[in-house]
Image 1 (cartoon, rainbow, N blue to C red):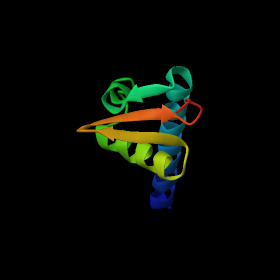
Image 2: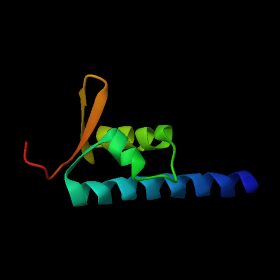
Image 3: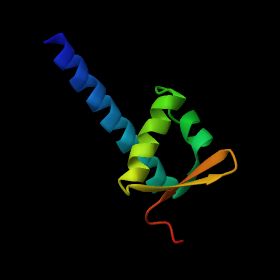
Length: 79
């Protein structure tokens, strides 16, 4: 049973992180990945990148790579 509870906690945490990312993009429309990571000190770079990747793959955000830098765009941001 503890494994199930831990899985639910991790899932809730991942969903909370995605909601935090979307909220940040709602406020700013465009943000660099490194700047986003700095605004989410409770999460590791890997956790943030994984959530960003999932959001990009499902169409929740637009993710663009420029050299070694990644930029996130709100889907409401005019292209």
